[in-house]
Image 1 (cartoon, helix red, strand yellow):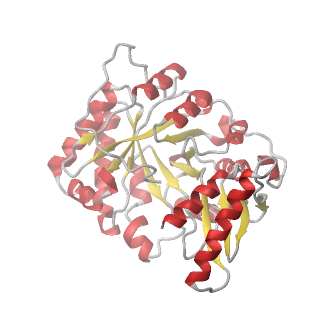
Image 2 (spheres, rainbow, N blue to C red; image 1 turned 120 degrees about the vertical axis):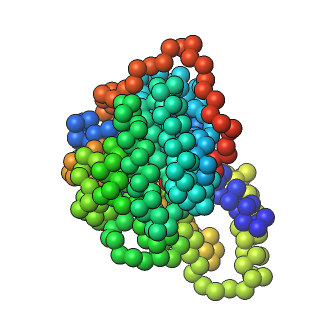
Length: 388
């Protein structure tokens, strides 16, 4: 385990390849806000992400911090960071926090969904907190629920939407992507709980998390364009395009593939030799350590890099400016409400060149500067990088 951690640290020392190394895609005219709608940007508050928010706030339609959770008793926990609120007020960016099932716990969510008093308590807390903090509304991001909770989850969303709408507040829902309603293991354990048709009737919009496409059994890109098309073709059979926000990832995924079978002793010896060789080159090299260049797959419309380490081959798929463009083009082609980006601080900085200034149609009235910070229950721990 220590060796794997050491290798990961050494690997991280090499700088990312410059964007110019990625294959140049076809010429692209920047789309306007009327073409791509409203952009929701998720954020896990932290120094780097908040600095990015401050720099690019004018292109952000809605900021959605992952900072609230509901437990099985309907208690709303955590709070909105002061510095995020200040940036949002300064730039007029509507705030729509994510509210997750506490710890993404299946049992906490099921307890909440099947207890009328807990649901009433939760919905009341959502309304009160949104009004006191001048939020635009909420996005419910309940995950890890089995498909047997489909009706109960749709009922909760309908109840919450009714209460929030009465106070002029929005409700959206983060939903897992599917390319069909075939009942398989993933449908039963994760994606089947989201009834697109019922949720779209109640909520203002659905953020369809069109990622990750690949897993350890089928390594590949996070969200290739052909697969995202299949996701959209399916969801639009059950919900209108003006209720759909396309979820776009901005991170990368690594797949390690063993090329030949070797003994454990030779594998460890090979790792050690490569670590010392890499460290030697790091301190005896004039200039930065060179990594393999990025390549562009024109069919999948995704960038990748292949790096060989002895008997291992590491394939890295990354969502960069080119793949971001391709997904914005889908938003325009399908006439969707907009797009939802996971998450701020991980993105290729060049994507901001593709985005027009965001409309401010739904901005809530800013709270006065002296408004005290609302304390909501006790602070709950949100899994770092969890969700989406």
